Length: 334
Image (cartoon, rainbow, N blue to C red; front, side, top):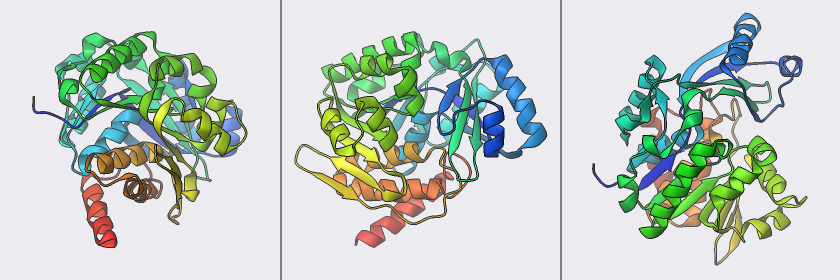
């Protein structure tokens, strides 16, 4: 296998997207803006209610770190994705989609079981609420991961959603050890307020003695640090990571490096669906850093890419659109 720039570990999920009302979320006892885990039977029951009363927007391959990896690869980076899918139709669809995006995978990712699915419920205000049946991805272990590409990668990227799985955290621990031994930089995302609220110990374990780059949004930053002001949150996060990126929705992002802290403004867009926006931001940011473009330029590109993701339904852009946006961005910067 050829060397890759980015080695990512995350869940493998097929998204089913619906446009829903706030009344529906309340009736189903779903906490808006967060991810809730469930079993297959409960999700099947919810799916029937959704199909009967809400607006179906389609199916898409998802998974937070996978969305990040697609953005990274589509912009021109080389990447490998470590995950676990079932030996079923959805699992093959999932891996085929990654390969079509020029992302390397391994047949080790395929095992007996059911591929995970996620009901993505998009409110009128564009906020996404997720109801997730992890399926076999909940049992991701080191046996499903080919660690060889990690040894020569530039970045290891860890999805915070893995904090709920004991076996996945062990796999992440091994990945961290390999990365440290080979001088690979480590990046992590907190992923979701629900992970901070319910899987804090798991996040602590994956962050361990610290990382090189930490991504989170404002709500996650405040919850994780148990503070009520972004400056206080940033100060605490800087004790865990050399570099911190806090996304601020339409207000852009707050970036902290070892040399400086600065804000990068957002772009004015009509938000349709926030699902995958933070993932795309991280992918574009890592691509730019890996290309030597610097933190400010990385944030500007990440904001451009993520603003386009929120302007449509689904967690990813068409592959060709990433490169087109990069070309436009390069012209802006010229």
